[in-house]
Length: 284
Image 1 (tube, helix red, strand yellow):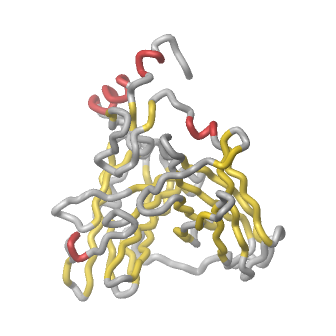
Image 2 (cartoon, rainbow, N blue to C red):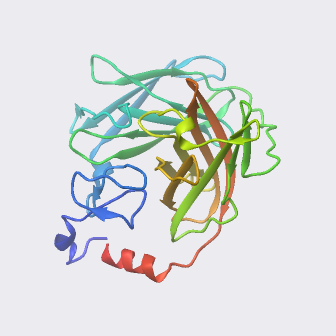
Image 3 (cartoon, one colour):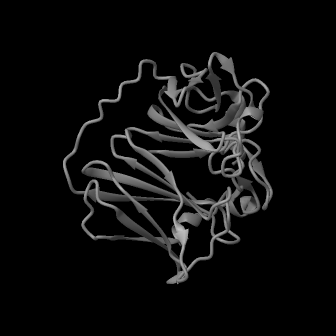
């Protein structure tokens, strides 16, 4: 909601993922690496993301070509490279049991194309994360329906904060400490053969030590998080979760040339804003 004081804030820039972080134009969030966005700028409404598919009727198990056209006033918008790619596309099934982090390739006509095979019939969500040239980061959400039989996932997690992937034991160490309305740390350890790995055991992946995505089960709230260095954990970051509920989390890291994807399920209850958080909210 705009108010009489808005003109005083037009030069205030905040992080889309960490609203407590403020700075100047051109700066990046020290917590997740995202470009700071003008506090009063409704940038995402200025761009139209047109999605077309081939074949038009999408079927489970059959390759589907996804074409994205990002436009402003009817013209294709040039994109900047962000974390080594122009578009990061997160595709998930509606029940959040299937996840893909993929990168459509730019075409001569300015569109972006990728082919994907959806495993089951049902609804899928596509989150396209991109940065228009000279503008803040944008996340666009699309939904598609895929024909075919739906098979409920039989995936069972013995512990919601421990994930075993390719011989690695990945643990969300503070999985029972999540709350809304505060700066929330993500403390993730990685073990192989009983040995704890350090950050220098991980290879850079898309311009970061790892990539983290969180999506809420109820409203499909989306967070794309980039870790920062911390001597205690090989994968560490901070974020700000506004809405309570159950979230699915995917953590991707690279070792020996292979990308590994660990997944967690996290319950986030309501938290009370601290005096510090209230002060940050007041400044915004």
